[in-house]
Length: 126
Image 1 (cartoon, rainbow, N blue to C red):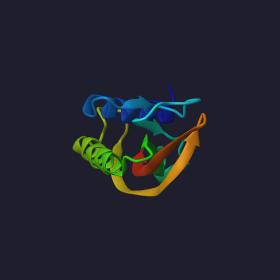
Image 2 (image 1 turned 60 degrees about the vertical axis):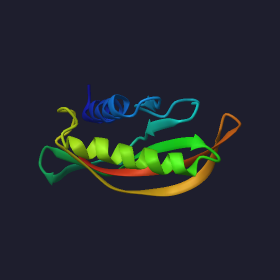
Image 3 (image 1 turned 30 degrees about the vertical axis):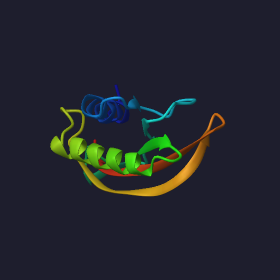
Image 4 (image 1 turned 45 degrees about the horizontal axis):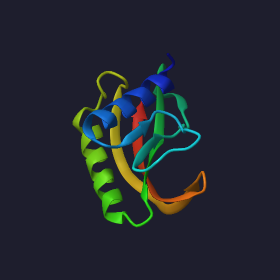
């Protein structure tokens, strides 16, 4: 398993273990039903900060809820942040993980259904 897949599985596993009732995907699915968390594909910098250490400084996890559930979205972001920050190695799936913020709160349509979404931003050393 390559480092991206291993890290995505570790992120998804951490969220599944800590956030009951949330559908969690370790890669973007064809469609989903909210509430959901989708681990996005990251941009990866090779050999940064050192040879043999790759970095994904803005790896995002998309959180989606019903269009009128802004409070639930805020709660999911807070719970996910706490879960991911509780174990910086994500059970050995990464060298280091820290949450650095959230962004892009917006409404998106997936398979004809509108969702309220936001991205939790992670800084990960693979």
